[in-house]
Length: 300
Image 1 (tube, rainbow, N blue to C red):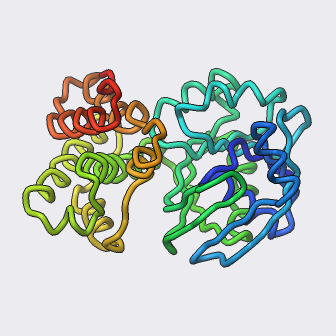
Image 2: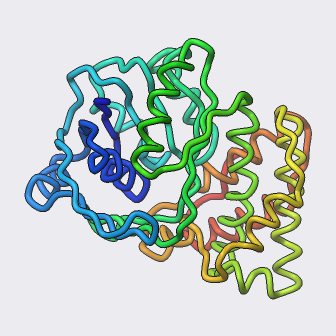
Image 3: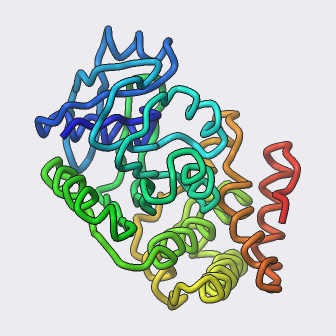
């Protein structure tokens, strides 16, 4: 396949390296300074699952040629500026962003029938341009595509599987999106509010109660949105995770980057408000994170 990756960060960089090593033609769409780094040094991936890899995808500051698929892997905060770099209309757009609201933005830009709903479960980071660190063996992409995109989604899923990225095609968009968001929101809010890893959160009764409260509130909102998620499932996933697990939001705050407050807890709070559901634990944790980051609390 010929695949463009918009945003070669912790997620996009990993996907770009994996696909290129599997023999696919990969274009990386990024700022010119990042493109220059990739031209000179390539993309370097250090992964506990995929190994030590160096790939040389073709970098470009603007996508002006046709591709089989566009994988969007920017942060939600950087999506509007990043989309200015895309000057073609790919037949399949696969977003791997946190939250929910980006789906509407992308469907307005590319058309509802070109954008599949998708999430990635991964613990990875970009400590500097061109360098990706993948620190946990867990890796999975879940996709729910409109009927007209099924064949294209299956082809991309096969390419990702071939590249060592497990990929599932599911039927329900709410199940795909909320299946990750409930878990991610609870993890991000608790680890970022208290600047602690998941093992310490789970081992402290009052903080574990906060984690459980965030999960239960997220599940209630998910149910109202059409996704049936048992709170025991995300709690067990986090319990089974390695105790040093943190969150990208926690890492962003530590690095002085803007955390995805609006994209993650903001999405939960806004969905809850649409259904008249209060989420006091999520709201309290999000306010604490905002205070730590020097930002306003997310808008409901």
